[in-house]
Length: 177
Ligand SMILES: O=P(O)(O)OC[C@H]1O[C@H](OP(=O)(O)OP(=O)(O)O)[C@H](O)[C@@H]1O
Ligand SMILES: Nc1ncnc2[nH]cnc12
Image (tube, protein in one colour):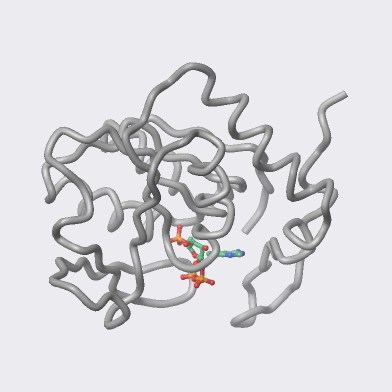
C-alpha cells in the first residue's frame, strides 16, 4: 500500500503570518520512513525520464532535491536567495504566498540545451517556481519537469506553471488556503 506522505506533514496555523496554514515538512524529513518514502515515490514517478541536472530551490528544495540527484546519478544545481552565491549570477525577483524575494543562479551552472528537473518541497502561488524556471531558461536550458512534494491547488501555482508549458508532478496535495 502506498504511504500517504500527508500523514507525516504537520500543519501550523498562522505561520509566518495570520491566515497562512503552514505545511511543515520538518516532520516529514525528520521521520526515516517519511524521508525514504518521499525520495522513493519521486524516483518511481520519474520512471525512465532522463535529466541532465536537478535544480533545487533554497532552502527546502535542497535536501531531497540533492538526495534525488544522488539516486539518479546526476548533478545538483543550487538556486539560492539573493547574495549567497559567490560567483557570477543572474537573478529574478518574485512574489510568494507570504512575501517577496529574489533568487539567483550561477551563470555557468547549466549548459545550453540541458534538460533540467526543477525541484522544491511545495508549490503555492508558483511565484518561486516561475522565477526558477525563468533563470534556467535564461541560461538556455529547458525545464522538462517541475516536481514538488506538496501542492496547494487552491493557490493556483501548479496550473500557472503548466500554462507556461512546463510539465509538473506532485506527490500530495492539501485543499484550502
Ligand atoms: O509557490 P510560492 O507561493 O512561491 O511558495 C512556495 C515557496 O515557499 C517556500 O519557500 P520559502 O521562500 O518560504 O523559503 P525556505 O525554503 O527557505 O523556507 C517553499 O519552500 C517554496 O519554495
Ligand atoms: N502554506 C505554506 N506552507 C509551507 N510553505 C509554504 N510556502 C508557501 N506557502 C506555504
